[in-house]
Image (cartoon, rainbow, N blue to C red):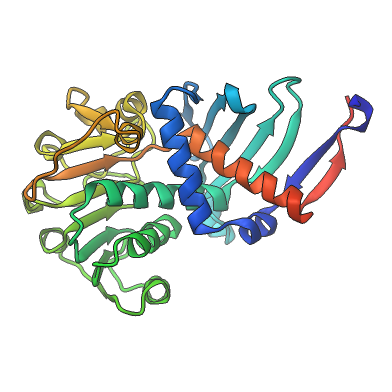
Length: 326
């Protein structure tokens, strides 16, 4: 009854206790497939700069046949670092589509990290050469770490990780995280960005997207790029000319033109990753092809992972239920 309605709250500790990489991979794969089949809807994204210096956004969607509806309110507040906090902040709200009432409020930081890492891993499995042995990552933050972790999980051929840090100095904590993910992988800090790109089978860009990270002519045939950082108008990580040389895949064709790398090359042909997973489309990748996965993040990823966390929390009695009468 309305008077007895409750809202389940799941804080970061609850979410982290319920996340499992394999389950996240399954949920993200489902999100891409739902999007391909147009069984899941993605509503127009809100993504705006704030006078405080932050960026605020809302990604919403639904899966009508599954009774799944909700949104993620998220953004980037760089000043949080000075406060000792995480710049990326996210909150997911699952809503009952029959009544419009909130069902579960979830701290979205760990979910955003995990679902983006899983999406990157799926992109690598679909697009990178199976014999890829070396990876170069730009960035050493939370997203750079999870991208590399999923890469090592899904591509056992990887043996070398090179990284470029924003400070230009080695990052001991980042290196430790890589060694924890794979004891068989060597990790090294590099300062010559172009040489690192030229020497790597896979390039992952996971930075705030303030501008091109390397020169276009450093990119060698056969390289795959996961472009993670461009998620807002004006952001970019790839130099001009790369997309025009590449087979480009996006999580969402329209979003990639609005807020992704394709905003800088909107006329480049693009395939959606979900269409590859459902065999609606295919790519005959040749050894010398350059491939790019333009990752802007789908609301459906947040919703399918959020639902999984909600269901697991209910089954295990995790979280705080508060009265929410109406």
